[in-house]
Image (cartoon, rainbow, N blue to C red; front, side, top):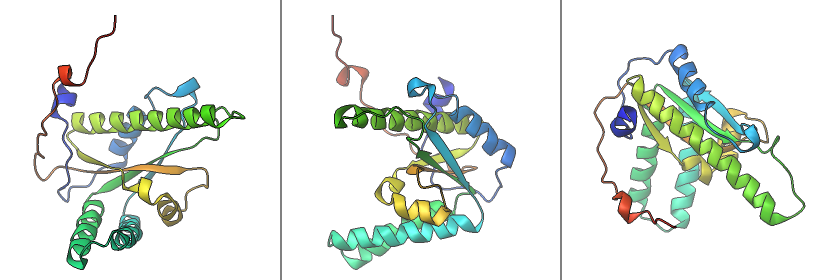
Length: 196
């Protein structure tokens, strides 16, 4: 519970490097998440060095195209793209969490096929939460970005990922430059019903 209550989305990091052993510890935590049929449909790409800049650039270009299609003002687009790119490039490490359906069950109908995809996505999300909690426990800052969902092909191509790896999230990591902000949470009673 300590890590759960201390966890914050950290978007600013120091220059202190994150060791490969620490990243390995995060991935070990990720792979302990529950998954449907124990198929473990998560895949992870650890992005460091200049690959972070390349990824930030191509994702920023896609974001720029999307925002232009939304008819946003040019200065607002530039601001949003710059902020997004800075979040990626300022991190010491980024982990792209992907899902694969390679080992999931297949069905002849769309209803069950959709359910299988949702189950795989839920498992990847659970793995991401484990990364965030372990990062907090180890004194790291982390930020979960869902941006890869808006440009999976761009992310896959930039990182030369296998065709069946579907990018779901990008988690930036580093030693925190600030404590982040505590966000207000809805009361349990506001989001819960008891059914008897």
